[in-house]
Length: 453
Ligand code: TYD
Ligand code: MG
Image 1 (cartoon, rainbow, N blue to C red):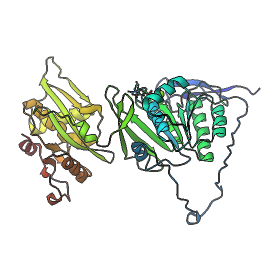
Image 2 (tube, rainbow, N blue to C red; image 1 turned 90 degrees about the horizontal axis):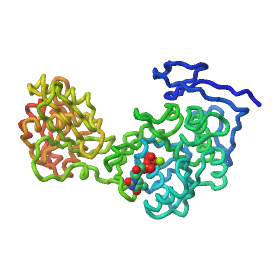
Image 3 (cartoon, rainbow, N blue to C red; image 1 turned 90 degrees about the vertical axis):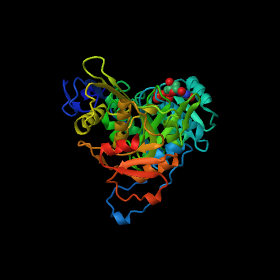
Image 4 (tube, helix red, strand yellow; image 1 turned 60 degrees about the vertical axis):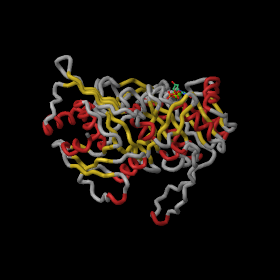
């Protein structure tokens, strides 16, 4: 028997060291090194039936024959769009998200919808019975979908070779293990080895593989960054578990843009595709309430209107509280400082609470002006006029800055029946005659206030 060889691996970034270290020299995380067995005898390299057609000698780029890739068009339009207009044969897609966010649900739903393709759904987390129960809840069962509860990778490959599926789903990478490696499932070396073998399987048999992966509390895809480097596409499923909306983002995509966004609503019978996000993100409250402003933002390439709500009240204790849900707290503090210093609003002794409706996280700076407007509206307790939307960034000196793709944002606001949109004066190339909605360009917060109330 070969001697058992061990090494220490950082569970955060996968850095390998011969001895235990307190701090990882690569990612600077503390206390992340764990001993793992790295070899157990000789490694077997699995060879798959459809062998690769690649040549390994150098070729002049113009001589390489361009074979148009036949992408599989998915029934799920949101997924299709986020993948970059279809699924590429032989691609390995990592699908990450927090526990309980709906990864298994989305993948199972996809497996039920793709009735034209043979799908092998491998689960290492749930029993056949559990999956069947969930599938029946989601909708009609797909006769072409096969379930396998297995955690051993070599055995999964054996079944896949017999079945020859068009698509393979693995739920999840943290539960499967390869017999080539002795360390426990979920450890860095197992994850790395299993992913490498799955990648080889995907490329050699041209079967697209979906790999579900958990996310750590800090929000990175569970465990190793190496995983993200190995796969072709990284999709992330996010949202607030207490809310019904879920966003599907692509973080990395070798076959398309990472600007696309998919939106779903979690219902009792699975995930529903949301075609018009703006309508659901704006509350239909007819009363004029102070502290609410509508921002025309862009998530990826998708314009949508969302409601920003603020509550400003006199601080009951010495230190005022600042809290933001769905918005960066540091950015909120910066905007408050700008309002205080540049515009003279006394907010230093006030509690400020900010909330983005619908449980969505927004990172687009174009929402700044709506944040400022909602805070000022709540502070003065005057409601912002109905049918006004805002879209601009606020700079450190209180100037209103332009945002990208402003025409898309204006069109979206117009489509949803808004009468006026406030943007930066510096947004060039926007002609009022192209739009029905009134476009107001401002350069200072004071000017915005005159328009709002
Ligand atoms: P799940 O897909 O198991 O999450 P993950 O695989 O990401 O850990 O789904 C988790 C939640 O989704 C679960 O708490 C219940 C909810 N859910 C619904 O609301 N409706 C449904 O139709 C299904 C199947 C699940
Ligand atoms: Mg799951």
